[in-house]
Length: 146
Image 1 (cartoon, rainbow, N blue to C red):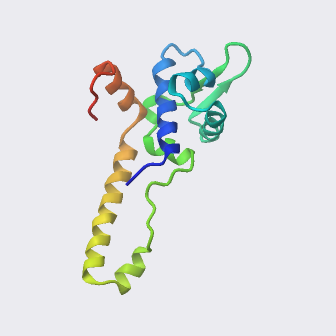
Image 2: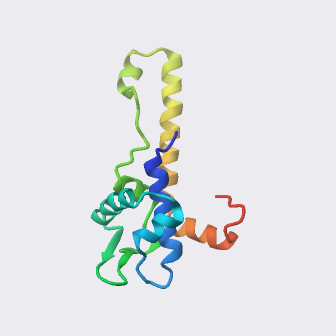
């Protein structure tokens, strides 16, 4: 499985927000853009989707920016990827078609990749933003291992 640049940028920016908004002060997208080298226009698009999914909310006016609408423990990586339209569980061929008309090797391979999809989905569902931020804080951004 390979995640798109949209998934990478979304996770980088949301982790940035989590790491820099510890004191509940709104974080400007411009600041995230500068720290992460991501286009401000692109971040605005991503955060609009995250806002619509009730993951973040915006604070307007001077000193405004973005904050989380939920606790970090309540936000899974799957929630974040789903919010921006990332479907990392795509199948090129329909399972039913392969099971019905495929060779034994195709069926075995299909079953293997179905299991991999299940494990990936489960990992993204069980991993929360809190898990990622805690790992970063504990390791102090040194060599991370998830």
